[in-house]
Image (cartoon, rainbow, N blue to C red; front, side, top):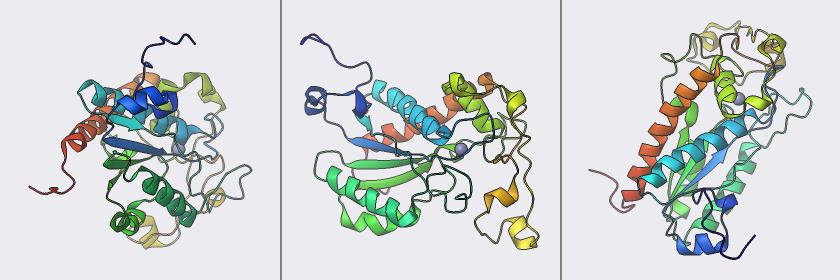
Amino acid sequence: MPSNASMPTRPYVLAECSWREVGQTPYEVAVLPWGATEAHNFHLPYATDTIQCDAIAAEAARRAWERGARVVVLPTVPFGVNTTQLDIPLTLNVNPSTQLALLTDLALALDGQGVRKLVLLNGHGGNHFRQMLRELQPRVRLFLCAVDWYSCVDPRPYFAEPGDHAGELETSVMQHVAPHLVRPLADAGPGRARTWRVGGLREGWAWAPRRWTQVTADTGVGNPAAATAAKGAAYVDAVAERIAGLLVELQALDPDDLYA
Ligand SMILES: [Zn+2]
């Protein structure tokens, strides 16, 4: 590259920045996207959760950056909690305790480097960061918060049947952000999920992790048949806009004055 190469086109994506840009930019808010590597029916790739999280983090950061927020998206962690899918080949589990160890190391690294806020952007249903943030927050000055990207905008107006895993929502989002990695929907299984025999678990007020291969034959939970790239684009637009608003607010937030 010539030495007069200008700023990268995405100065809010750390993986694309050099020390020159990083040294000159007063980054205030870091975003750590966190995905998983697991089967997503027959039509979506194993990196689905990672690709979605990565794309949504970058799009939200782009919008926040254009509104003056100095946001930086960190590299997406590609390994999630998949303890009850280990009978599916090449599902790559990391345990919650390992996640906490990694998160602690990264937060301690950032702490004192100028960034004052860290947003965990989660893209996988098996990852849960709240208890980790409760444990970690007293150890760092960094303000910590967590968002599940798929929970910040109600999907029901966008999809006939959003589904839970490789269903209409996730398939539509992938058709929008990584269409070259989506197989024809004719290749997909129906994503039919068996229900718990126990009433409290079925109704959702009792909880246990699902044993994936007993729940679904194709690894999907939710029918992808009605997915379209246009639905995915509309939903990603709404989600990115909402997260961008959060990032802009966090930019202005004084971590010592959190409450109105
Ligand atoms: Zn997924």
